[in-house]
Amino acid sequence: MSQHSWIEFLSPLGQLRLISDDTALLGVYYPHTGPLTENDAAADHPILCQAATELEQYFAGQRRIFEVPYRLRGTSFQKKVWSELEKIPFGTWISYGELARRIAQPRAARQVGQAVGANPLSIIVGCHRVLGVHQNLTGYAGGLERKRFLLDLENISWKE
Image (tube, rainbow, N blue to C red; front, side, top):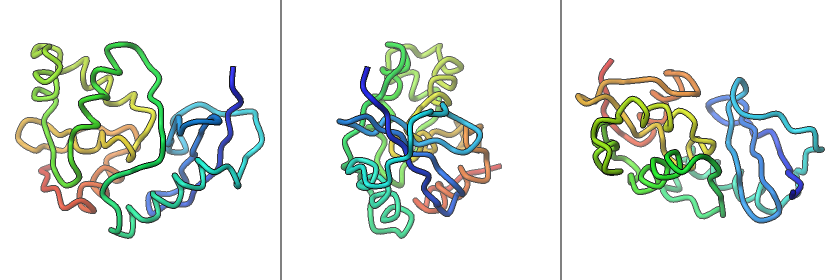
């Protein structure tokens, strides 16, 4: 098993914990989500430094696509959903139902929502871009205030 490194990153959304192994970013977590790690923080780890830089650029409106190497770990169903999340471009949105159709399981919108909520790479893999069918604001692991912020940052219209 590879060793994990982590740093705390102060963002406009509050403190984020970035976790990586030696080859890829594994997680971007809000304070109340995600695993804790017993390893020491590694502020000079190149993957974590790249992730922090790219997140800073994103929040400053200077980046739309993340290039940091990352790896998604989950069930086969989650990975199928997350693979579709990766295809949603900056500044656009889809509904949970559309996401379910894209994975060829049109009746699985609720399960798709659960997989979206379990996305370990918040912001990097844009789960905030999934809304209700009429652009209604729906749940977000980081809380609705953070989801509103990210949607507004990307100029995505939404409804309460």
